[in-house]
Length: 200
Image (cartoon, rainbow, N blue to C red):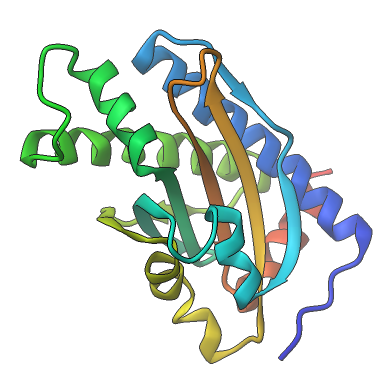
C-alpha cells in the first residue's frame, strides 16, 4: 500500500505539528533553563530505507525514546539524540553526577521524554479534538538502523513507506540536539486529517 497525500494535507500536518513541537520545546527550555532553537517541522513520505538517514546513517549511535500512541488515532513517536548529545543533556539535568547512563540517568531521560511527548500530543489533541495517549517509553542506546527497525516494524505490515513528521531541536550553545519523529499509522492518517479539516 502506498499513501496518497496532497500538498494541502502535508501543509496541514506541518501546521499542527509546529504547534505541538513548539510547546514541547518550551517545556524543554523550562527543564534545562537553556534557550532551545526549533526548526519548522518537515512532513514527508519516505521509503523505509530513507528514514534512518535522518538519524545520521545506519551506524550512528543514538539514544532513542520510543512511544506508542493510542486513542482516536494511533502511531509512534520517537525522540532521538546522538549519544553525546544525550550525555550533555544528562549533565545539564545532573551537573554533579557521572555522565554514564545509570538507572537514575535513564529514568530522568524517560521523564524528559514523557513531558515532551505529552506536551506535544496535548497541543495536537486541543486542536483536533481527539484523544491521543502516549505509552510508557522504551529506552535504547543502539545504532540508528536498529532503532528505526523497531519503530517501523508495525508500519511495514501495512505500508511500503512512512509518513514522517520530523522536528529538529537544539540548544543555542549546541550542547545538545535531537529530533522528534511522529509517525502516524497509515490507517489513522485520515482520522487526523479529517479532524484538522473540521477544526478550521
